[in-house]
Image 1 (tube, rainbow, N blue to C red):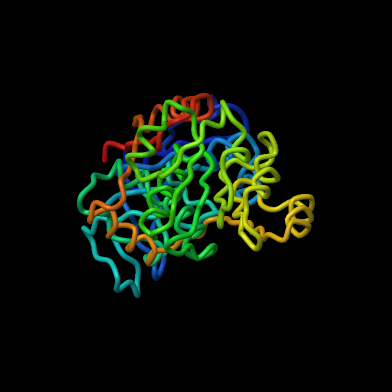
Image 2 (image 1 turned 45 degrees about the vertical axis):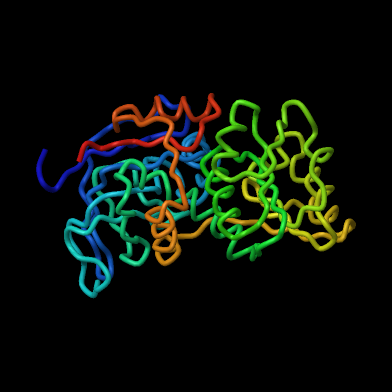
Length: 322
């Protein structure tokens, strides 16, 4: 393979995991203010397989062919004109370009330097690649949107997943009380992460077990048993529901207004400065990164099958063998 080419997981049509194939494609070159990063590992997220099949961010990316993936961790290979924050050889991680195409399932990516941050020093690339999209979603929901404060009560749905396990830990870091929903097999682990109460959603209705909640971080949505609508019942007056998967429907907005509570949609954005703060928390031992399984780049389809058909503990990651 020539220096002008690289391996990437390309899909040329929408469909099941079988549409993902490793091919040689042209290696990108950084424009002014951009860096070229040699990717060591790429995170796998639900938005990836939703987009692969024609949902998720497919409307943003347009028709295939394209390369999926937004979470990356790697080493700066070269820098474009004007870059002053990073240098060749720096270990970095990030979620560049989201929701536009970043092409993270590849050996190289280019993006604005300020959409990256220096990788946490205490974890390897595979763990670092599991962080950006999930941790930034949790951060932007709890810190930027809900402004969670010490002493509040926060309910986190799907607490054992990628975003959820970060949301539990960040809520605890902010001094709030954490109520988590998850299957019983995850309860001990979630308590180790800091959950004060854990609700087995398969055994009880969460609205019967949680009350007087200030903030709900809804990582499930109304498509599954009307989770968003039911969550309004547990909120205090003027409490806030942050609806992550599908946003706020007219029905949800109307129901929230009738109950005197607030609702907000959230779509995560690239944020280098927040990633730097998250890296500090990881290096200080205040934020644990859970990677359930890693796959070689050639097994991207297998990683999608694993993610779609099994409830993962934390994240799944691809490694490029860089």
